[in-house]
Amino acid sequence: MSKDILANIAVINNRINNTCTRYGRNPDDIKLLLATKTVPAARIKIALAAGYTLIAENKVQELKEKHEMLREIPHTNHFIGHLQTNKIKDLLKHDVSCIQSLDRLDLAEKLHQRLQFENKTMDVLIQVNTSFEESKFGVSPDKAIDLVKQVARLDTLTIKGLMTIGMLSAEGEKVRKCFRLLRDIRQQVARLQIEGVYMQELSMGMSGDLEIAIAEGATIIRVGTAIFGERPTPDSYYWNECN
Ligand SMILES: *Cc1c(COP(=O)(O)O)cnc(C)c1O
Image (tube, rainbow, N blue to C red; front, side):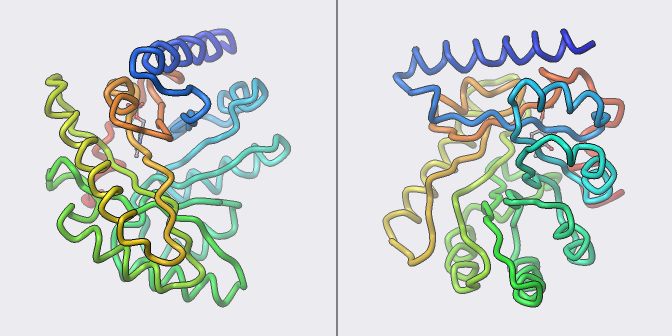
């Protein structure tokens, strides 16, 4: 059981390296984040012990349950799911260092209030809905820059870049369009030189489309299925409001 996870990670590393060679990128510039939704702590531990220590959950409840069990192994927690404002307080108890799914001002403001109260700060990525699918979260691309400007005023939050989920399509060009749009938005934001806004991270690419994402400039790829296997719950449970 531990072998499959490590073998799968080796395959992912090969895919990263081959893609980097092909597109003239440095593999050191790409962070592999393990998307651990539905994966039991015992299996996550195998990856952590092998040195793959950047992990992320989609739900505060799962974060809470597993954080207790993963505590003893040093690791970095990001959050990549839809965050309800009534879960902010809970999320902040579990050592999350970056929320990649910040997609609306009211969430940013409530997060800011709570962080101020706790005398803490938080890195965030702005999640953009580059596929224009209603079933996906994320600020719409035409409103992304305004959201960046507004969030930049909240001094407990540091914007480190952008995140997106590409269109789930077998047509590579449709997926590529999503990633290219995210990269374009990053460039537009970077040009504005907003104080306290850093645009170094582009979190995009998953099990099925990481090559396209790397070709388009990803700095963080988020991989679940290709490492831990198929999930029992459909992604709609994590990606839609209706649950
Ligand atoms: C589940 C999930 C992933 C990983 O997807 P896989 O296709 O299993 O690699 C990446 N990003 C987000 C936001 C996710 O919810």
